[in-house]
Every structure is written in C-alpha cells, then in structure tokens.
Image 1 (cartoon, rainbow, N blue to C red):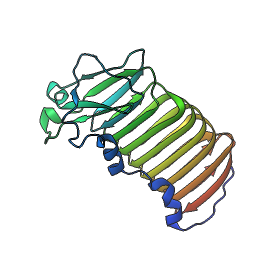
Image 2: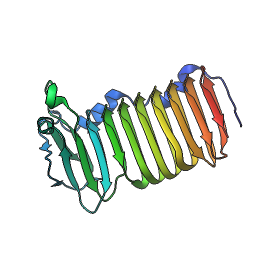
Image 3: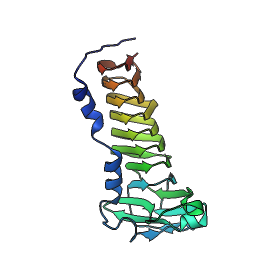
Image 4: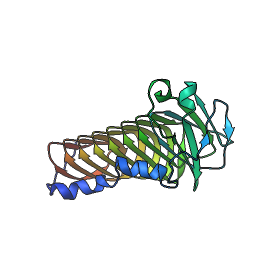
Length: 250
C-alpha cells in the first residue's frame, strides 16, 4: 500500500471540490426558463415522443430511469395527482424535468417513476432527493452531477473523460471505462468507482465524503476534512490531505 501525504492550507485543498453546489444545480435545471416549469410540457403515463436530447437534468424527489433506445420518449408511473404536477422542458440538447410550483402535500407530493429513452446519454444531473439509474452513458466527455441527497447509478460508462460532482449527501455508483476521470465531493456524499476502469484520475473531497476508484495510471488525490479516498488498480498516487481523512493507494 502506498500513501503519500502532504499538508496544505485547508482553503487550498477545498477549492477543487467547491465548484458545484445545490444552488448551482437548481439554477442549471431552471436557468433557461424564468417561470421554472410552469410553461413546460406535461408528462403522462403513456410514452410521449420528444425532440432529440443527449442530456437529462432532473429536479425534485422523483425516480428517473434512463434506458438506451432507438427513440426519444418520456413517461411517468405512480400516483395520478403527483404525475399531474410534472413538467419537462427541452433546452439546448437537454431534457429538464421538474414540477410546477405549489405546496405539495399528500398524494401530489409523492415521488413517481419517470422512464426516459434515447439513443445516447452524455450528461446526467440530479438535484433533490430522487434516484437516477442509467443503463449506459457514452461519449468523448461524460458528466454526472448530484446536488442534495439523491442517488445515481450508471451500469456502463464508455468515455474518454468522465466528470462526477456531488454537493451534499448524495451517492453515485459508476461502472465502465474512462481514460481520464475527475471525481469531486463537497459534503458527506460518496462516489463508488470500484467497478470503473480508469487510466488517470483527479479526486478531491471537502468534508466527510468517501470516494473509491480503480485506476492504472496516475491519480491526484486531495482531502480536506474527514473524508476517505481509496484507490486500487496499481496507480501512482500523489496525495494531499488536511484533517483526519485517509488516502489509500494500492
């Protein structure tokens, strides 16, 4: 086991992980429309054909399932009153999913399951407490973002570069292959990349989060706080730590 620890000022270590926040995620989903989702299109229990997209951005408590397919479709399953609050917007290659404004209690506040199909997914963003699962993400650059307490799982990633950011207590599980990886956690979230085969990686934690990754080339690992980074795969690691967190490289 190889472990190299250099002590740097806390602020210097925290910067890489602090470039993404919960407010950033909400703004990103809603930025194209000042009225939020009020002018969006409804989502029904029957699959509806949409315009083309390669990115999915979801805001709220709902569960998103992405399935690779030949067509662009969206549908919802669950409580009818809750489905009635759902809306989606197509914006610059992204399908944005959320709810119209209101104080949602009872049936209208229940989480529903939204299934989306498209030939290709390159970016997934989740803000809130929902879950997001994708059977595959591929492209030269693949991006995964979580803000809040949500969970996101990708069964297969095929990418030259993979960036995953978490702000909050959310967690990501990512499998597949990527040449260059950038993982960052701000808060108590976790990224599980044990089934991801990476060449080179940059990993940073600010807080009590955890990251695991399998890499064969070079890894730069930084921790500010009590978080832990575990690297397997035989990579050469350069490590910087401030706090009680551990960086393990084997």
